[in-house]
Image (cartoon, rainbow, N blue to C red; front, top):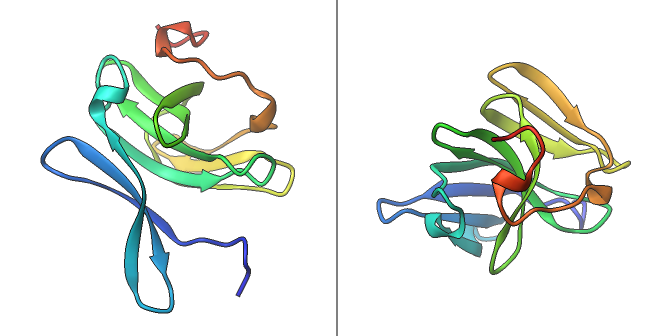
Length: 132
């Protein structure tokens, strides 16, 4: 088993909280990595999907959907969300390659954002170029 490989999922509950969870392969149970309330973004996000951990900085990145605004690549830590890039529609799955490029597949097919770790983060999606 690859030590750096992790099986993760994102789930949302009826209270507006999304959890990023890791599968504990030995037990089949999931443990919470982080809980993300929709209030972490303005406007509140509707869903999170296609999460992957960058091999360059060990930070989790996910696609985030915000109603009437679109889909975004975000960085997530234990207390906040930071916007990195606009995505071409909703994403179903994603991974990082060894060079740190985020590959995702979604509504519009396969897409890639290269060298994600070098890209700046924004606390507001309005600060992200081309997202308003």
